[in-house]
Length: 177
Picture 1 (cartoon, helix red, strand yellow):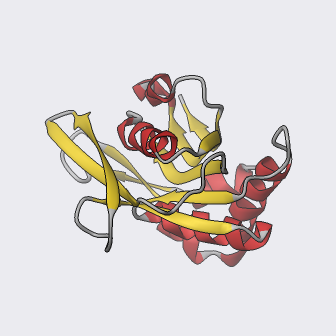
Picture 2: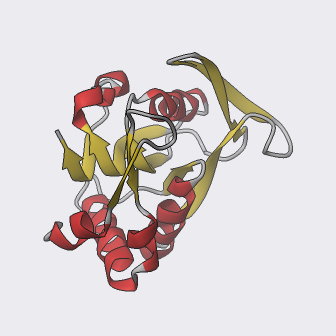
């Protein structure tokens, strides 16, 4: 896959959400049908090439991971499971707290979302510090799932978020050093 069109579709927004931050805006990429298809096809290709075959479930992280995760799950013919912020899912849930730069956050999955041994790929839009993706991996393991890979549209390499994801393979379609 040639990522050049995807790089061109990501817009830099300086000083958002606060001064000194260079925000990577993916909304132009999502709005461009050809770019969105290219990103989904890239994720699907990675999933199909996994050792042992594609996953049985895709876990999408709140909220833009839902967009990519649902489309990839549909293309693969597998289920999609959301990881949400605390208090957003009905029924019995499992939760995992993790540390942010200035505090703590909690994410949840429905307790019956995965069967033991289920092969899972996590998808999100951006890998920054790795806290949310790391929490998603912990939830998958707590529910008995087997994480095969974590996929991102964008990785901000300078934040070293990959280090929080342990030995689970990480792939990003776009990398910013």
